[in-house]
Length: 157
Image (spheres, rainbow, N blue to C red):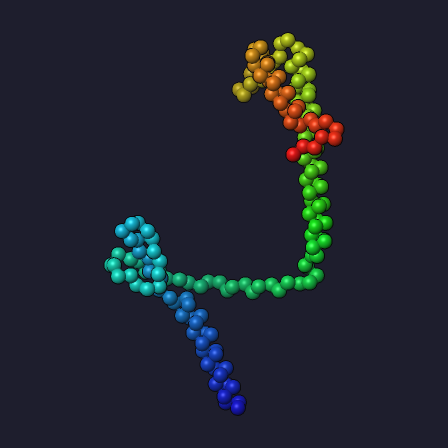
């Protein structure tokens, strides 16, 4: 019985070790066909225009971590965490929208308050807006107000 078990262990060991050696020593062939499609195979192609690639196993596969019951969250906990994250994102979005609303309202007030409005262009030079440019900026400010400033009770999508 002991001899039989030893023989079985020896055979299994030989199979396991030989597959590791064989797997890394497999030849891989690469060739391009007449349609310029690249092919890879373990079987040598019939045409003469191919290259043989070699493989090297320089790493060991990491064992899969078993799930830990303490790490797994319940569905209720996951839902609670999601709701908290959602509330935080919505609060941050509201804060940004409020800042943009105030800036747009201030821009509209400034554009309506003065006949001559000066701006700094991309080159850093000051210039007065023409009536057409001023109206375009005013329209843009009104559009921003409609986007960022919501009335009480109105939901934004």
